[in-house]
Length: 124
Image (cartoon, rainbow, N blue to C red; front, side):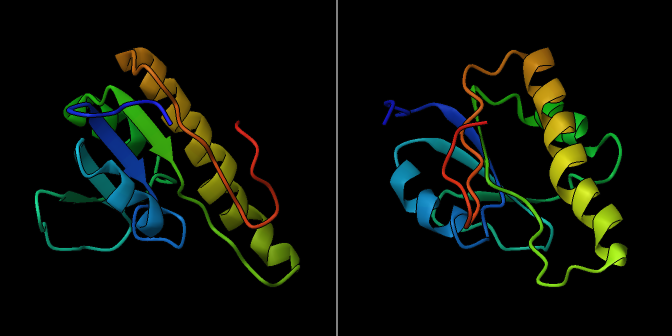
């Protein structure tokens, strides 16, 4: 793992299954954790509430936080295979990721982390 000591790190999906396991590994970094649901700041960890699927929110967050590193772990997982699941899943996964990529490259973040799901562990 790259040494992220003292780096400003934005972690999306920080309250999720993978994100909650990654946060303790970043104890020497200046971490800003992102979640769709409000959480209290604690132990030097700053939480922001944001739904990255909302247009413009990714850019607002990245522009205000100005991270050196973005670790993108946010996403939506649905168990059903109905046609009604397509649009919300597309927005929460693809559209949000593209928006975050655009924002991170505009602000010149050094690393754009990994996107891991239960079905893959490949870098994007």
